[in-house]
Length: 362
Length: 251
Image 1 (cartoon, rainbow over the protein chains, first blue to last red):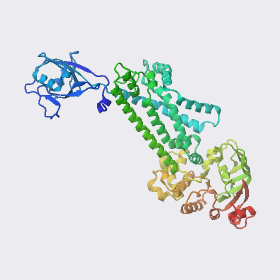
Image 2: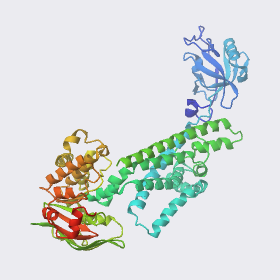
Image 3: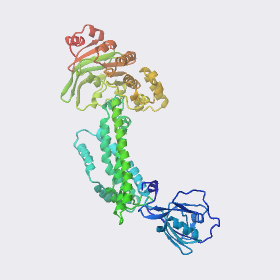
Image 4: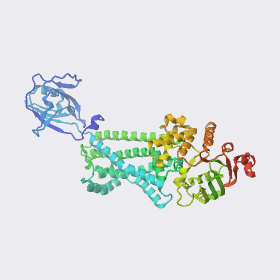
């Protein structure tokens, strides 16, 4: 299940409907390839087939290879005379009706299909489908969400943390309220942020970009609100770890507050900012409830920023909520998410170890 | 004899706790003044008053007059940033910034708005040469300063300070975190810097005060007990407390 095709493939299967009315080359289309056992090649048609299984686990006849000289590599579409269809490796055969009246279905198996091919002179109707069930769309959506969310939340969060820690007057009641409010945000269930996104950010982005309903920008804004407290508190923690010596040294060199903050403190807090970024990315990848409202649950193969789509986590929800839950695919996607989040967390661990090492040395 | 700092009736409180009581003393130009005394006697506090580093501490309250070149530094509207460029400071613990050696030295001039690369390079080189560090680091100016040894880091901090071309360098126990060899190097450097800069040094090490300084001030419990030329202070102290401290009877 976990394969490159899963990651790069479209979710929706495309069906090609085509026919062949011409004459075949008398010599056939011999291939210089040697095929493994279980793969059957028809020299007459230049096509190699094998028995396989589709994503749902049903038996099917998979096309392994089509000789580029073969007419099969370039056939007219049944639906549109002017369009050409290429039968190629990776597609599976749904049904073929040959001109001599024999019918081949996927349940016949590859070997029988090749025998039918070798006996036939023409094809009346050939239906093939691509595999589908790939997660490229949700993957790209997730990538966009990470990018946009971090563009919005990172500068805002880092500056807020710097304000709270470096500039804000100490022990003032409104600063304490602000800090409490930030802490409180961490405890709010994310579905409530989703409603906030639906109530505020979707209308806002619709007005600004002309998008209809949920879109990637409203989703990113919602996620930004969710990750802000994560960023603020972890950057503030790292600011606390910066020894006061650096601030004093900078002031003693005649630097003002702004120069000290942006040239020394910001630089020293870089590991903290990196940690905050990775934690936020993990949160974005894993977030599902909020996004159901904020960008929708429509699975898309072609991602447009101002349209609905799904992130990986919501994708699981979408395929499980359908009439036929795709349990296998959702497990595969879960595994991908878990691996990414685990990798991010390990990186965070490594970085925080490096921070303590550096401060010890300093 | 010219005075660069004049301190009159200086009282300082951290919150409720008074750290300095009626301190009156002058600091002479182009001389090394040592401030000695037991821990918590207020010598570091006094040092930090001279470039207003105490401003950074919450609840610090100051009364009295500290004049630098005839101008009172605690009056309102006094340009603190300018004061700190003229009165540099080296701290007890070597505290280079976690950036390259070059960036450490160039930091001060850059903050003053010097952008010209050539000019900066010259300033950095001159400062490192004057801090007797250039030969050791010229091959690796772009390495992280935290990779230097403790003594080198402290000389880098001195280089960073003299890159600002100050008038005065304040040193807060600059060798207390260093081994004897690194200490000797710093002391040698301090004596060399005397020609160009006024130096005020806080030290716990009596021998160090005797070796490097021209005049010495002895503090006890936040009060200035006695100050005068180092030779006389160590040979014929006027006060009994001073004698007791110098001879090691307490402290």
